[in-house]
Length: 118
Length: 115
Image 1 (cartoon, rainbow over the protein chains, first blue to last red):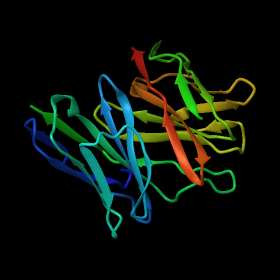
Image 2 (image 1 turned 90 degrees about the vertical axis):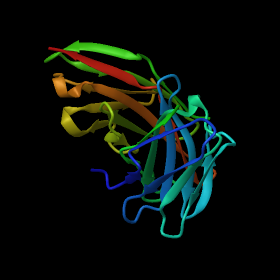
Image 3 (image 1 turned 120 degrees about the vertical axis):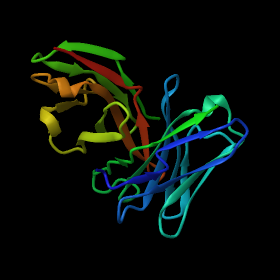
């Protein structure tokens, strides 16, 4: 158990709908990452938040958005869903941001949310 | 700019034989390197990491990796494969970019262990 929780575990919805995925990082971790994993595209980095602020963007579509709240949990919002958005969505957290004294912080991954768009 | 290349998308070994999963990286600065493992329908789990200390890094479950700067490689090895090692493995490079940690994942190597 990594200490990162994600809800829900499974989500089935129709095209055109909007869903919200939730992530709670490990206690004390300030940085949250979102990833999408699909069979055809592999593991894709979407977005990173640190202490409530967006810090890095990856291959995130305009239909997707995220935020990190004062209690450090994060939500990923997916709207106007398409069949191709069906994937596993992972959240990961890490203690801090940046590299200090040559050290780099590993990420702790949640179990993922499996989204199926029909 | 950083990048990471996992040279094999699939590797198949017999149980009890050595495992070698290859990873090459490109980085502008002194990177940190990681290997993660993902078992089917599970999240990713850290196997080991290199952060400029010893070049030979030991991880969990008997895995180890050697950082070779001259070859820009960070290959993952295990002396003897176990059935439970069947999973997908990701090599990851991380470096400081404008004061923030930038992380790049490889495309993954699926390890099959044959009984």
